[in-house]
Image (cartoon, rainbow, N blue to C red; front, top):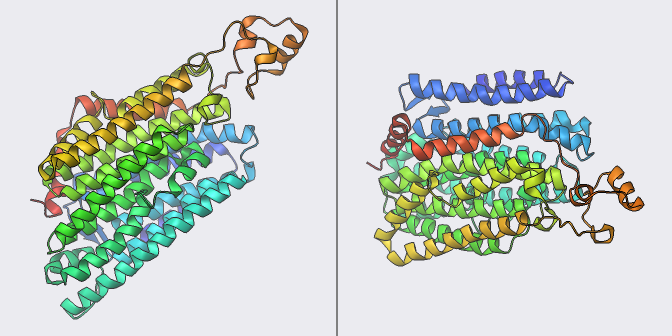
Length: 512
């Protein structure tokens, strides 16, 4: 079945290389995302789950749910990409000759992630998860700047190096299955049926090695060091790194921990997840407070949220897992809002640094308000849906240790203060009426005509005060507004269909 899917997608990619029109290439990318989105919804509605498609594909509510989130984030990023890449080409930051390469990597990322998610075989999952690393690195390096290439290489070395540990964990797991069953296997379904027969010590060793690989993919500390550079240097369609790559790593961790819950190694595995989660939140929270780069701030925020997800998974109760799964969806919606808005500000100021942002509400008021509302949402303030998700995960953590809950809460407050500190310092700067020519030092701030008027002493106050306004390209605002509106809607209304889906995942993973 995988061969047929790859054949169809291969034909699709071949057609994508034919057109020279940017509009058509972008339409094919958006169509690819929407196709995966629709097929996932139909599969959830029509198929009797869990079930197999051929020998290698396994469909259940969990991988379809993650695929749904992935396709949604990918589709929004595809619509945003058209205006953003046009802007990059106009500024000379993206070579038009690389446009086909960009969309090829963009589409391949979704295809390889889809095969990884639906693979019943762990070895196949590992192979295609590694291929997503290559595709994502191409997107980071597409601008061909030295800093982008460095960030891409750092990403590949760290994630692929960590995934070698995951490969070692696969070898351990295969050996365990061979000892227990007489014939080795890496199929999720067969392993889940016989995991109680495996040695708990070796199973824990396998989990630890695989956690290193999947944790690096998800951006868990201390394997997170690729994430700030990749976010800061990649084009703002790097939103799919948050929506796709990190959730792929969390998906692998959820699968592995579900296996261990049936063995005697479950308490130790839970301790590993909780410790890694607390460490990630602590490192991210303290790193965020000193950030002056907007995209790096958002990147460290992702590290923080992945840590909280680990805590939800590690607690191991059905309620904690329910809200951790919901968290995966909402995090993507809000994080893409932040990255899309940050991309607009980057095009306005040619910088992600807060000291270069002036007169934001005069120049880009919609992006500014999207960033403010997205920041309120990402720190978990009501009525946004991250509030109940964080609340119930913290409530469940209190059953383990009230001191753990208090420590996490304090670090989350510090992370929230980091966003407030950044926004206040970046958005409160306005140009005063009294500024004169000698005091204007901001790069890219004035049009050539205004500079000539200043030199001649003929410029009025507005021409001195305001930098040139960036005309936001068509389609760049809509995805940010749509994702934020969808997140807000989930804060007011929790659909029964979504609740049933999350309950079905918990049941299939053996939590009930």
